[in-house]
Image (cartoon, rainbow, N blue to C red; front, side):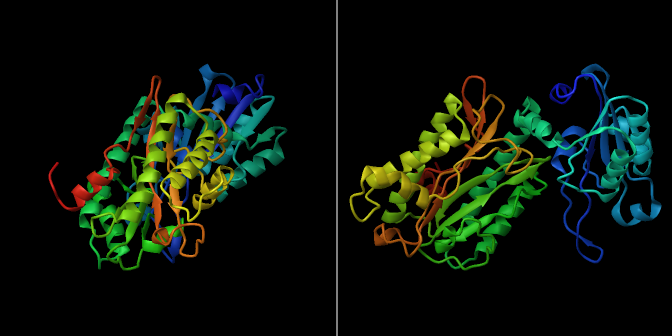
Length: 423
């Protein structure tokens, strides 16, 4: 709250954070519900049609009021029970709970009862029409400042993971890592990408996750060269490499892991060469995280290191001038090498990647190499190969912690797992 108060120190602040609403794929058929993560972060509430309102003019006297759906017997018959207003304080630790229809009256009363008011509300993300209408009416009828930069302040807070959040992230990564191992063990030529998708989903849920954190990439063969390939329905052929990018959501916190493995359990010479070059770069980038670089610094380092590694592995047909290596690396890995991770997979999107990382940050490190079949710069044996290796890294006070370290990525470990050999 200090960052909010510092913007206008002598003002009374009213902060409104709405929940998500239920979305429908067709008449009466809902999509799985996923909460607005800013609302979840501040309230802990996983219910639809709610809103959190924080009011005050100093850190010591802020009050919290959670507005929830009014009791409706017919709605509970179809959708199950929801929190009643009188129970909100006990369950979620807020100062007070009220039915959502009282939101407009409450906000009007707060604004009219104080001079020099700021109403904080993210107008760029209109998730609830009833809340949005309330805010517009309040702004029209009162002489106030309407500030829509609330999301920036929320994301600055979410950037630093508490010890409790770190534990949830650690468990999310452990669940996903185990699911990857099971997926590797179940892989065989002749099966389909969709079967691996199902295995990942099953194992994550059985491990305690609510669901997958995002539609996974399960890309066999040349499909791996489509960066956001999510069709996941092609047959897996003998000799294919399979690139899998998946994670799970555990109590609101997401893991994000990528691994690449051979369909038949054994890397070919060309696959091994390209994989080892990518893995070597990834390990060096993870080591760099100890110096708390910015994500953009990691990306620039990846381009430099990947170009050198591919040249040293004789991936290119001709000797390449050192001045070209950076450009070739960018072409072979067109995505950024890192993003923030937390409640959302691509977390806190308003935070720039140019800032230095700090203790409590969790980031991904994910170099990749994608060689399309029509690439004329590389040797023929590498055409059609796509590789990405991604881990989740916590920046700590004294070092780093690779949260996804349980997920194997060394060639010897992957081949051992796929052949069901003991350690």
